[in-house]
Length: 154
Image (cartoon, rainbow, N blue to C red; front, side, top):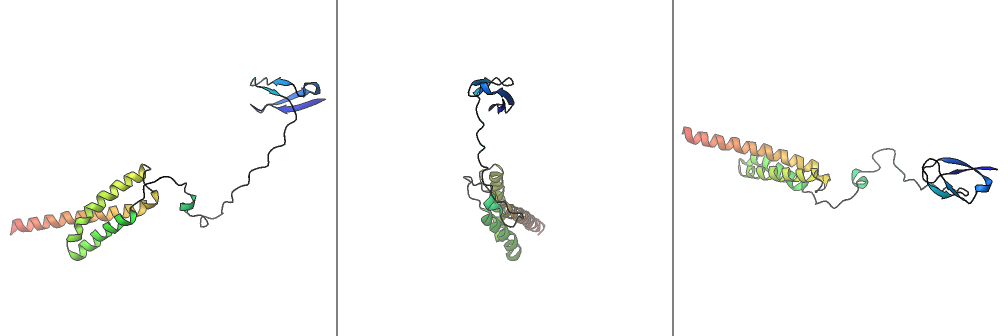
């Protein structure tokens, strides 16, 4: 009687005579030696993890694999940037000084997010605060230039 066994190393199917059962067999393809015997029943498949069909069921925070990130400062940088831009326009000057701070902090934090050291969930707020800080810095420079020119012309 001929039996078919599978090499555990390369998965090649081998035909063996009944007399070779429970004997050492060498696979002709990979030269792996194993004891021929009845093939064990396959283990039951692992239970599958239910995956929702739409993206609303799982938000990105729960799908994200947690790491040891430095916490992001997105709300702080966004607040500084908006304060410098809106407050600088409304109150003419003083809050504009905060613009370069938001720009510098935003640039540093975005670099840390890109390098994988800081939590990436704050990227959008950090980017918004940085751009508001850049705009406020430009307004600050324009305002200082106008003041200097008015002093020189007076």
